[in-house]
Image 1 (cartoon, rainbow, N blue to C red):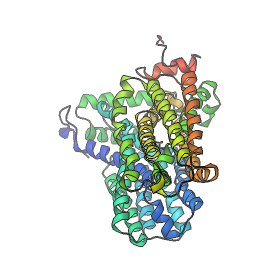
Image 2: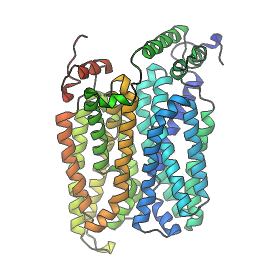
Image 3: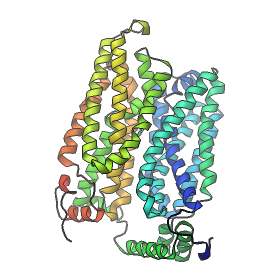
Image 4: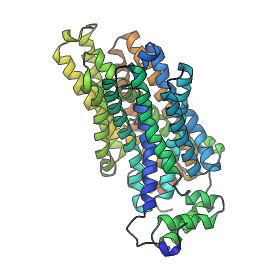
Length: 477
Ligand code: BGC
């Protein structure tokens, strides 16, 4: 443990802060690596394991089932094991499950590994933001929150790129598939090993009555004695305030209202179709006769690049404006993509497909992903972390995270077969329909949470202010 004498000047962060941020960033990266894995590996997996469309969908979507289980149990892990051990646990699962997959076991075992990877993602997606918010110095907490979504998109990008590269270099799936899984193992092992260097969260230590240990950790992360005293005082105040209210809170009227907002935001985040585009864009472009790097890399690249401006715009323009812009952009582009597919009809020879539908399809995919990345991607997670009253934040975020995975799984498990059954254009019109509903929902029920303190919003909520005005009333209390 660092001694008081090691306390550095305020302003320059200690090495441990960089370790914390890097390990936490790896948690986000692994989320993305697993989420983005399928796009450019599905063909190889189907080839090696002789899978049809349905089996491929089933294998892809089992990640979401694991994610639901992981999210469900992560609150319990966080409380009883502590934040650090939960992160180590997630790192271990990522490492073991991806390394085991690289051995190319039988399909049921490979699927069990993907479930385990999903479980790790579910745990990490709850613990990482929690750990960051409790451990990173206050001055960088805000940007650390958005770092998580950014790392997800970087992970999706990275794995798409490495998988394309591997698939092209090694044509034999028995060689390429293990290498694809080992890419995940590499980052997973880094997270696992790095996890041992993490300090435990001071808040969790205080929660367990271990004040001396908590102070020792703060000595390692903060710079001055004054900052340490202040932090300890804040934690104590929070611990004496309303505590996690247990499952009983879901019966309280005011909680049910914000829970409904969080849940529906997550439902729409998935039903606008993002993961169909993330998972299956190379397949979809393939239907339209487009192959190669353009088909493989367009979606992950645009998704990553446009998450950067979102981080600023969310504070400048507010959450709702971005949600509108995103949903309307996705609505228009999904209709355009549907029309392009209708024009292509049943032509199966790529050279017979006209350049106009191809160009429309490509442009609409790019704009669609822009629409999501700049809005619904980061904003939904952000709003879900802002709307719940303190005593119900853990349970609220657990439920909304589970809903996210449930609907992600639903889309992954059905999108391709829906296209096969009802024609390629059909699914785009379905997603467009959900964009319309999403716009109406934002207008009627979603509060603007920009620039209002969480405490004020909680006060408004408990005093019966209508949902969509929760962020507008600033009153003394
Ligand atoms: C969503 C994921 C999606 C990712 C894409 C996240 O906000 O929850 O389902 O794959 O964004 O960037």
